[in-house]
Length: 107
Image (cartoon, helix red, strand yellow):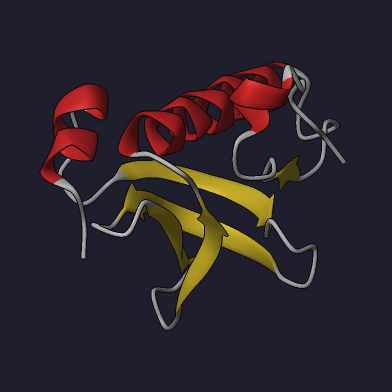
């Protein structure tokens, strides 16, 4: 299920080890993820802490867009660590967000 380029970009096998709250693109799911990755359908998936469930959190138009979202999640995680968890969950942006000139959404 994991795209190999994710491991190369973040230097971690199996996606990025994060421990971050992520709300799905459709706002219906909130998952505490310990790993995130991209599948061949340009979907970002997240493994829940404890590894019991894997969730599809968003669908993107291209692999490049999905990789950009992983970068945004990593940036949010770093900022959240600095602020001791005060930033809250990362909200997945809509597919095509880069084309609309939209900005990152945070909850």
